[in-house]
Image (cartoon, rainbow, N blue to C red; front, side, top):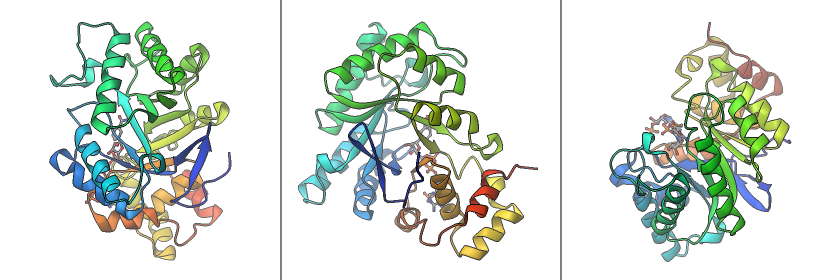
Length: 288
Ligand SMILES: NC(=O)c1ccc[n+]([C@@H]2O[C@H](COP(=O)([O-])OP(=O)(O)OC[C@H]3O[C@@H](n4cnc5c(N)ncnc54)[C@H](OP(=O)(O)O)[C@@H]3O)[C@@H](O)[C@H]2O)c1
């Protein structure tokens, strides 16, 4: 796959424009609506959410979207909307489905509730939020995936994906799936070669890798002398260097910043180009 050109670019996957930088809406609670509006006004065109009230206020995302549409600043067709199905184990008591129903039914109920929250009749991408077990591809995961495939076949989802999957789990699902995953969203630790194994699996199967916690999971990197030297040479912020390096490593990225200036900086993280050597240094910086 080719490198992503700029932080504001997107890649066509199966006829869907997937933005390389997506605004994430976790942990925003009552501020969700305003932050979604702010992010779209700043230039983000992709929004990540989940029907998991414990960490996301999906209906608040929908309110922000409606406001933007009403103001004529964007339209549903211009945006990339991504949400997730979350097993009961990842939820609190505010479930978007009947827990006594089959997993297949839970997926359908959760998905329908997402469409209502976002006031849309389709999603650009829908992800299994996490596998049911730490290892392996379980019967539960296959049932959930087949329910997602049904929604895909009905044209209500354009791309299917997963989150928090290991390389082996990704291989397992790809092997069993009739409609293979096109997106993997994972926490990206520099100490694990920036999730090298999963990124390699993605490359083999032409899957988009979306990295999250790029800043919060890699605080040690930010103080590394070699990293600091790159920050000094470029005049970029540490966050900008991380995000640009991630794009040059062929990752798509998420940011959930609550600050307008950070949104703007993140979208312009490529205003000074890193050299190939600098990207290589960052890719191979291990925490010693
Ligand atoms: N699939 C999953 O299981 C999963 C799990 C976690 C997250 N996610 C997704 O990923 C999104 C992002 O989450 P995240 O874990 O990467 O953390 P995040 O919510 O983006 O948090 C980033 C932290 O870094 C700070 N920061 C400082 N400078 C920044 C800059 N220039 N740009 C951005 N942040 C800056 C932010 O503070 P300020 O607000 O002050 O900027 C914030 O405290 C979530 O909203 C969610 O959509 C998915």
